[in-house]
Image 1 (cartoon, rainbow, N blue to C red):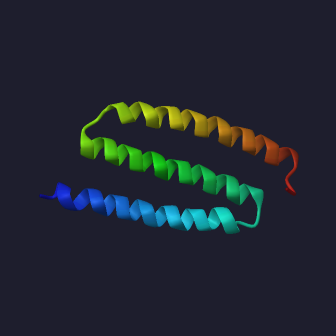
Image 2: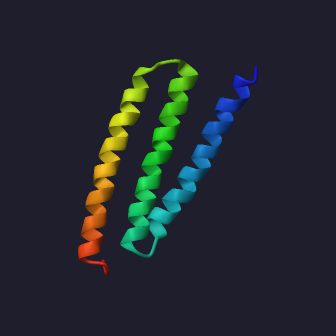
Length: 89
């Protein structure tokens, strides 16, 4: 019975954080703000996939989150290098 309350509550909180992070992504005055917001958006999506994997008891989604994490890490490093070369962008 408790599971019927917890999973929708988690998805609701993730949806709220997704909206707030998307606002920072579109409004954020600097490129660094946008890179951090994009990184956080991917973390939120990964968390939503993890919660879905736990609720549906399908372990295949755990691999998806691992691959997503690797891609996001390298993307963030690449954007940080680009921003460090041109900090006024």
